[in-house]
Image (tube, rainbow, N blue to C red; front, top):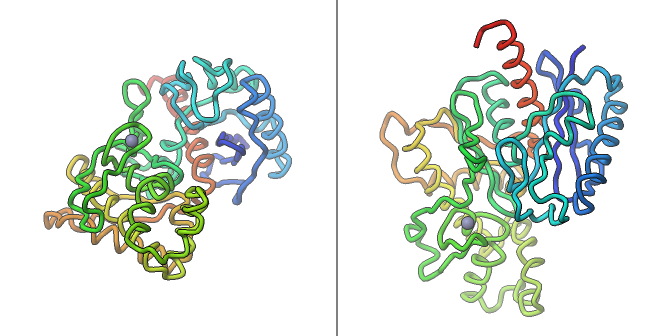
Length: 347
Ligand SMILES: [Zn+2]
């Protein structure tokens, strides 16, 4: 049996999956190993390889059955897996600057390695969950987490772009003035823009923009205690749970996020005429009733579509916590298929 591995390198954990030739994932749940990316490439890659051995053991397969691997990481990195010279949040160690993590891992493992950024990997999984790993459809995935990531899949392939920044959906400007509840707000993003999708739809947006805005209009709200103590980050993390319990202010925060997504998806509908729109990420790791409410609010936030496009479906991404690893594994399988196609002269 030939297998490919999916390796999702996150800030604190590496998550693994294994995918067989029939398209079955041999590890259904989270399979995690601590990430040590802050200690630099040498230690981090050793850790990735160790974790892969444990994952193979857990699935009951010999390591030698794994013939290729897909790796996904947070950026900024090129489409080929070379980190930015400026480094990134989890890649501040000086040795990461300009480091080719795809080639580094390929050398350690001795098998071919494919690379995607984490948002694009999750988007590829979202796509494959609907259309199968070789589906030729077009989909747009928005992943609402600490920031807003995601990806664009056209004809079944990830749009990586010229330098690897394809699908950086969080920094796309949206017409936020069309959202009535936030009149007067200047939603600032960490990237410096005012009014991009991440500035209104992410945990960071809740902390920096949405919660301060709505708390100022509700002096008796219980989250003021944390805000006054300078713990807006802790307060922001409570918003999802409170919204789910029906707290009015926290529901408004989520309604604004949904409306921002609605405006963004509307732009994507007119740009790509896609087969599906997909939402994933920590924001919607909630009970089914809250998910349904949130999805309905996204629909409500979308301007009216032309009749032909009114039925473009909006889906929740399944198995969201393993999305990166699953998408990375699918990318590895696509790489192998392309190589065998090239060898037989089909390309
Ligand atoms: Zn931004």
